[in-house]
Image 1 (cartoon, rainbow, N blue to C red):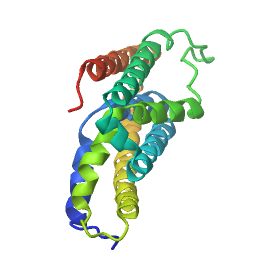
Image 2: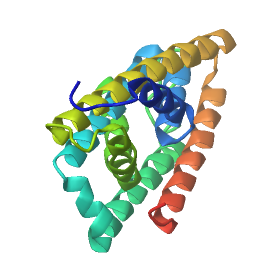
Image 3: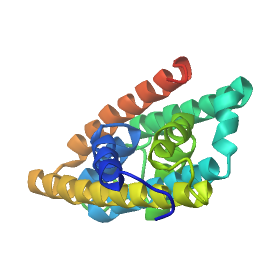
Length: 211
């Protein structure tokens, strides 16, 4: 269908790639552990929305611009890196500055902001765009009647895999967070630890090449 081949291999490969830790995974885990599975779900849905942007961009050929234009790639790379550093810095400095509840815990971050964090973390990473451009075409027949439609179909399959994994991770992380009953101090240091990781991801993205 759609000129797609080796769909099972694509699904398994996509699932394994989703399991590899990265900024998206760290965001889902942190939000789930500190605010519950709904917060993790909001982050996952934001990430999934960002993935759809990459899929559509690649299907329409826009990602090819990043692959061929050094200037475009550099601009997007630096914007994405700056955003990751920004998120990491906010995790470090604003968790303790937010207003607190009657129990002395930090007030939860609104779901819409968590969704936006997930979306921007994913969509501003040019390496995600290049990944789709390099990975997905391997499973499309050269004689496919509509390569763009095949690309979108495979992108949707990949995103379903991602949502299943991310929501499972959100439920697991929330359960661990609830079982361990993270106090305000522990939650603050967890946010700072993940914030440091986000800054590191941002620096790595800024200094890295296209590989």
